[in-house]
Length: 297
Ligand code: CP
Ligand code: NVA
Image (cartoon, rainbow, N blue to C red):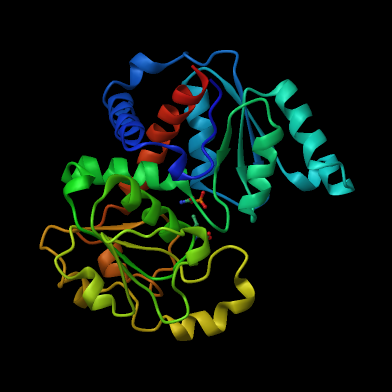
């Protein structure tokens, strides 16, 4: 049966844990997994820029023996008003899967509704499910089963925070989210928030005794017009030595990157012994292989 990955809630807890296991196995035994997607083509329809997600999907597909085509919407007839429906049907005739990075979650869901192939959300303004799957893999690699850990978020209530909320809803771990007032995650995107998820405007409260601390940029793609006001509002939410000291001694620090060093995270923490940020970037390659195999084979 054809599946899409549009939001993390498209997956069950078992499927998430299974993808983590498969990605860790691919990482351990990388030679065994070459060539399984020979003859398959993944399209990458990217309206926003990307370093990690684009490259790791491309290399993941090459390692599995398949091909990718990077598609900028402005180079297609979408830029001359060809309909979403017709575009989705035609792309389905050539491609085996389509990863989309764009602004609107609704647009990704609309394309998926017409597509005859699996559609993957490679980031929207609302969610970033592939990122949280690879981040859960990183948490598992560094600290064991994420269901037993206390996870904190410090920063903007953005697409990455929203997806951590989905992860906590599905897996049940305690998640403490600290955002400045007015920058909380949008509740309409996540209507039913269970009691294991706590919101605060105090970063110290969120990170106390945490096993994992997450942060992200203060100004996400598309929000450049709000840069000055956001930087002012987020003063006090910088992840530095003092905040880290409130977490467990062996806590890991996570940032999906790109980072603005000195803004949301200090150099000292990002390059320090608790940092897992480059492992997160590395693990996207293995998780994307696991996702592609799961959707296509
Ligand atoms: N973490 C992440 O999605 O990075 P890119 O924007 O570089 O793809
Ligand atoms: N919240 C960030 C994540 C980048 C990977 C953004 O949307 O720009």
